[in-house]
Amino acid sequence: EKLFSFSSIGDVVRIGRDKRVCEICLGATAQGVSRVHMCIELKQQGSKLVLLSKDMSTYGSGFNGGELTVENRERELHPGDTLQVG
Image (cartoon, rainbow, N blue to C red; front, top):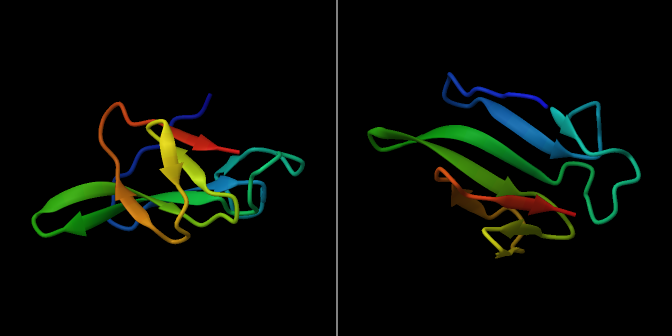
């Protein structure tokens, strides 16, 4: 189990197969997982800070039980949201 904290604007956690660039590495042979599948980044939008997930995959990612299939699409994350990779 790993805990990640976002303390500065621009902090990023990458999820995927490539252990050289991903803070969360799902293994080189993970089915349906891209080298860098998605990233989660702390950004400023107006006067508030938000966590955004950005799908960078070939395969798409699940978001709250649905699909986030558009490559490079960003979504704001909220407490209780679930992400699925692979």
